[in-house]
Structures are given as structure tokens and as C-alpha cells.
Amino acid sequence: MRQLTVASSPKQREYSPFDITSHHFWAQPFDERDRTFAQLRSADGLSWHKPLPSLFDLVEPGFWALTRRADVTYVSQHPELFTSAQGVALDPMPAEVQRMASFFLAMDPPQHTVYRKLVSSAFTPKNVRRIDEQIHDTAVAVVDDLVGAGEIDFVSACSARLPMLTIMKMLGVPESDQPAVAAAAEKLFSMSDDEYSSLEERAADTISEIMLLASTGAELAKFRRANPGDDLMTAMVNAEVDGQRLTDEEMGAFLILLASAGNDTTKQATSHAMLALSANPDQRDWLMADFDGRIGTAVEEFVRWSSPVLQFARFATQDAEIAGQPIAAGEKVGLFYCSANRDEAVFDAPGSFDLSRSPNPHVGYGGGGPHFCLGNQLARTELRNLFRELLTRLKHVEFGEPELLHSNFVHGIKRLPAVVK
Image (cartoon, rainbow, N blue to C red; front, side, top):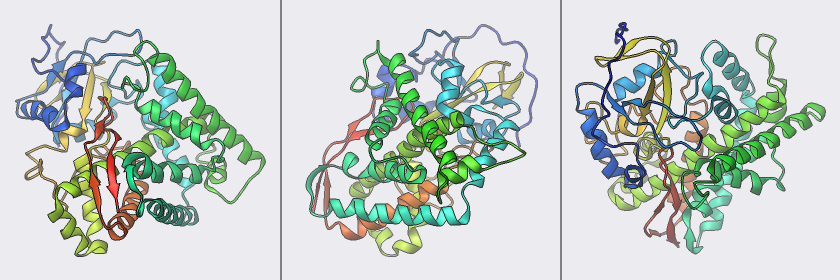
């Protein structure tokens, strides 16, 4: 385990010559970006970078880039040294906006622990069985519509459908509200792309989409308090830990978290994994030789390979040291999961898509600690069920060139033309 040491007051420092903040850098393909991250991983310590562009009128001095898996997991597992309570966005963003958008992601123990227990307690064995059945049935229905469909956009026709429909059914979002909720969630995670919002509109649009999702969740909570049902939303509004319950406003914040983070991660993993399987037919053959016995291992590689969430941030609560680099209290550190998942010190041939990779200690669900992804089992269940249907029922899928999302936060594919037979 790494030892904490007290850092002296930081001297005036220069920014790293390696650019990982500009629009140009994040417009590059993943592999080109990783060549820069590989150079940072091979350095002796951390690197100091210019702040990312912000939608808001905020100025920050910069951040430390954590590009190796060991550093990412160290910070993730020491919330007493590196707090989430000041926000988890690497780009400068007001704390109040982050609290609305990220719910208990922007909390530390013990407060975070209570909220995590509140949410977890609603996932009773009965509710988990119901969700598993819903996922299976939805995956079947999604692929029903793909069989023989011909020319499609694979993202909208498949990747985006299962996770969003799962969340809608879990929380009982009325069908009439589902299109607006889905559109708001997609736009919220895609705001950095010019297609979704102009530079001048992005701050206001971000707030607008957050408010739509929050109000929908709050109204659903109010309805279930007055009209209890045998469903997850009723269980959540009635969940109690240490005399505390989730308020309607907190349920609204939870819907934001589920509809954005819980949706987009599985959506992107699906698209990237299907492209990788198409480009590596030997890997598909290996999986199909024993699908039930191998899909668990394969899903872990789907997540490592896709790295749907590129980064999150933390702030140092006190002077500390990471990999020999002094970090001053109050300074921001960026946890680059996309780089940690290609760390040559941990993964053999990290640039290869290898479904038999084991062990596979990726950080696609976070680097451990209190913020390890609460929905990791939900995501795994969705991917197992969807890929069973896709790979056993579709005779032939041919992909065109993917249209990538411009984002420094989501490893996104906006559209993926395909011909399905």
C-alpha cells in the first residue's frame, strides 16, 4: 500500500507539454489519444495540465493527471485524502450543478455510505429477480426488431434501447414521458458535441436537461408515496437507513444518475464491443464455442476495451503524495480510467481485444473504494442478456464507419451504420 506523506507548498509549475485538455486532443480517435497517455504512464510521476474548457464562468489553475492504474485505484480507495464532495467533474463546474447531476457521486463517507445503503436496500431479491426478467424480455424484444432489419443505425436500434428501457421499467416512468427522459439523458451526456448544443447554449442546456430529469423523478416518487405499488420505486421511497429516507428531490437526482450514467455506460460498451467482435472474428468464435461458460469473462473485456467513462475527478483534502509527486491540499486530480485500462504494467498486450483475458482488473466500474459503480451487476446482466440474443440470433451484421461523439468524459459512438440479416 502506498504511504501518505505530507507535501510541501507547491512551487510555481509549468504545464505538461503533453496536451490532454484541448478540443483537438479529444477529437482524435481513442488509439491516438492513448499514445499520449502511454507517454504519461511511462513517466516517473504525475503530470500537471491546463484546466479543461468549461461551460461555466469558472477559472481553475489546472489538475494532476493520474494515468496509471495503481494511482487511480489509490486515490479511489482513499476518500479521506481525496474527496468527491467538492465535485467529480474534471472540467470546472459549479458545485451546486454537480450536486444536482451526480447525487451521491459527489459525497464522501459517512454521508455517502448512508445513501448507498438506502438505494441498495431497495434491491431486494424479489426486485432483483423482477429486473433480471425485465432485462431478458427486453433484450429478446430488441433483437426481435433487428432480425432481418436490413440497414439500420445500430446505436438507436439496439445499443441505446436496452439500458434506457430497463431504467424506465425499473422506476416506472410512464410511456408518455419516456421519449423526453431518453432525449434529455442523451443530450446531458453529449453536451460537449456541437450537434447537441452550441457553445453559447451549453450551460443553459445542461441546467435545462438536469431539471427535466430531476422533476420527472421527483413526480414519480410523489406518486408512489401516495399510490404504493409492488415495484422498485415504491421500495426506494420507503427504504430507510438510520431513520433516514430519500426525499422526492433526492429521487429526482437519482433518476438523473440512472438515466445518464446508468444508461450511457452500457450503451457505449455495447457499440464498442460489437465493433470489436466484428473486427476480431476469432474472438467471436472463441466466445461462441462456449457462450454460457465464457460470456462472464468476455463482458469484463467488453468494459475494459470500451472504457465508457473516460475520467472523473477528486480534490485533495490535505497535502499528500502520489507516485512521488507532492499534491497540495485543494488541488484537483483527474482519474483517467481510459488510460488505466491500457496500463502496460497491469495488462498484457493492452491494445488487443482478448475475451479470454484473466485476470482482468479493469477500472471500467471505477477504481474501487466507496464509489465503485453501484450498477455494475445491472450492467453485466444487461450485456450478458443482450449479447446472447445478438450473437445467437443474428445471422450476419456488417458495420460501416462509426460516427464518434466529441467528449472528454464519454467514450461515445453517436451513430453506427449497420446492415443486419
